[in-house]
Length: 348
Ligand SMILES: *Cc1c(COP(=O)(O)O)cnc(C)c1O
Ligand code: SF4
Image (cartoon, protein in one colour):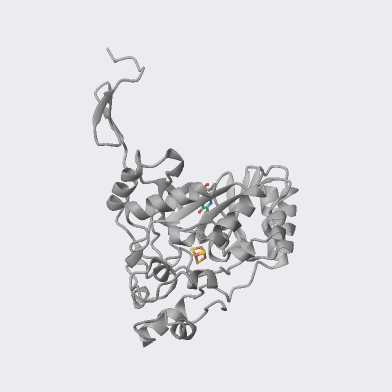
């Protein structure tokens, strides 16, 4: 089965039950489509609420843009000193090597920037980006993202990892990827070898539903971890995909069973045409509060909002402690409230 890349392909595979309407064509003309065989196989076409369909099959709802939704919802462009680099925090930069992804998620925060059309960073632009990193000794970490860096060939990846390995002030290289889940066969031994360099390589896996963690995905993750690459996960809280305690719990537990530490649970960004995916923050707070205590601490991700305008990430979990007189009131995982005195001397 090939990668499905357009509406007609999706329709032929029986994945567009409402038919190809002009409104849907307009959506497909604006935002890229791709569904890998590994993901297409998981779809139950008879289920109108299938969580895999919801993530990858376009709908007419994407044509509706709210006023607060922005083409660059987290302000990447305003923090880009040279092409390919986003430098928002002092100690780390994003390095976007390419625009292509193995799948195109309908809720993507970079949906206006990713797609098969855009080419990889040219050799010259990459040289400029590497020079920028070399010239800024405060940069400790380079995050390869994009686009999905594991779409590059092992040879190209090894070249970039080697170039980064020669920059003394770098401590590590991090990759943000969806490949081990959506196209696990791409995680070959050669690819794992390409990731190992002079600096530690850490991998952040984007995955949103436990059904994505198939036996092939588990094997790909196993090759990475066995190959010495620490793997963490990030998920987006998505209406109709993972917005229940049961789904979130089984996703996080399955990840930990596969030796992946759940790291971030993102609030959906204000990308154009994605309102149908966003869960209100108050509901998200209740969901993550409900995981505490019931699930191993290893399974707890940090719930996070990336502020519009490039102001960075802020934790969203509701505070479990409140100041109270000369001490604190702490709410436990079962809702019990307790007074706590730390060792600050009481003010006279
Ligand atoms: C998200 C992001 C990072 C990484 O932040 P962490 O909290 O370290 O995961 C770095 N730079 C930019 C521009 C980002 O958007
Ligand atoms: S893999 Fe990441 S960058 Fe690519 S479409 Fe999905 S969310 Fe966007």
